[in-house]
Amino acid sequence: MTKPLTAKGAATRQRIVAGASAEIREHGLQTVTLEDICRRTATSKGQLFHYFPGGRDELLLAVADHEAARVLDDQQPYLGALTSWTAWQAWRDAVVARYRHQGQNCPLGVLLSEVGRQTPASRAVVTALIGQWQQQVAHGIREMQLATKIAASVDADRSAAAIVAGIQGGVSIMLSTGELNHLEAALDSAIEALRTA
Amino acid sequence: MTKPLTAKGAATRQRIVAGASAEIREHGLQTVTLEDICRRTATSKGQLFHYFPGGRDELLLAVADHEAARVLDDQQPYLGALTSWTAWQAWRDAVVARYRHQGQNCPLGVLLSEVGRQTPASRAVVTALIGQWQQQVAHGIREMQLATKIAASVDADRSAAAIVAGIQGGVSIMLSTGELNHLEAALDSAIEALRTA
DNA sequence: ACAGTTCTGGACTTGAGAGTCCATTTTGCG
DNA sequence: CGCAAAATGGACTCTCAAGTCCAGAACTGT
Image 1: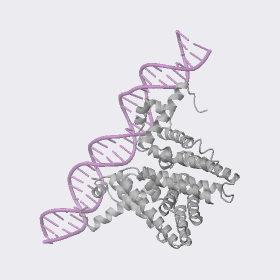
Image 2: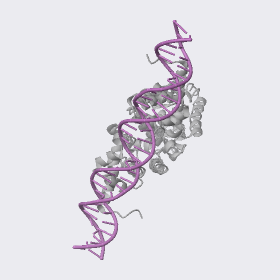
Image 3: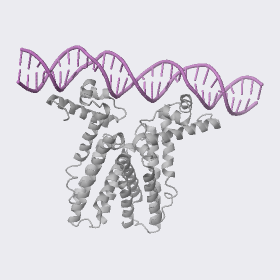
Image 4: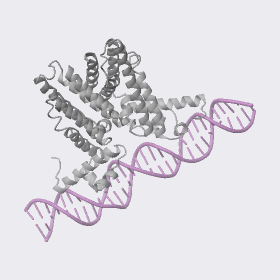
């Protein structure tokens, strides 16, 4: 029911979303204009409003979806297989490395701190992302519990919530201060806590 | 060297900053206009630019300073006297209660997620805030260590960094999803970790 | 190939908000 | 009092970006 879209049209639409995402990651949500996006993606205003009749808001929502997918994808395969302490460490390293390497260029930070609060629809995207993420971490904790590597008394969901919060806070702080310490400390402390519980 | 300011002038300037802070907390940074601020504070454009010749940016910087002070003040007296587990719990409850009670109306969230990245000057304000906060938490940990209530092996600064990150993440998530779980989980897990270390 | 639809380009309109300017009032002070 | 500096009000300009519109090119299926 969405729309009749030819192959070419779908490609253009996709190009716009990807270009807008990149532009926003690089320059921030507030400073990016539709014209910037047109320039970058070699499209025109007409096309932009053709594919996103709702204008800026609708495009931003599509960008939010796109970015949300990236956040989880970028943590794979680690996040999906937290079955040993080595795996947890690898995941931790992957998360830290990613943010060390790309600095400001961060989908999650943009999503949560800039897009998230704007409209109900984009809030829903963020909420779903957080939920999935937390669930995957919780799943990892439960697997470790089955293998009796983590005490059964640990509340998997609650610990997962704390870990996700720690990462998110670490990333926020990094985006504002440029320092990575907090992210590392949050992850290390959380994992350490799971170990000794 | 700043400026010759009469008592009346200083009062007006102060009124503008306070009004702007409130307006931003209530409606978000991007949606608030200078005219909104004028209306709320019963001032005019002329006054606004008289006191903040640098315009919007300069005003925002003053707001950032103002809000940064609130963040720490609002956690007192708890944050300054983390000398027993009861005190830690009281602090934890104060933080949670504050966010439960005021929801979106949050200086820290606004600061970190909206103002922080804008200009170098506002980044500096945020960086200083985080530093002070972390230091106060670390100080609390050290006092507990002196009283042998926390193991001496704990790295106070690193743990404090993790705690601040957890709170920040919890607040960010709350601002986007409306749920308080993550903030509570982060604080509880962090304190629990200090206890059992 | 041809009719209908989708896609594309870009000029144009519109609205909003930051910043300017200056006339007027109030205050500080000798 | 009386002058200079500071404070105030508000109309005005300027810029810029979102969104509109339409004409023309490219593609679709029959």
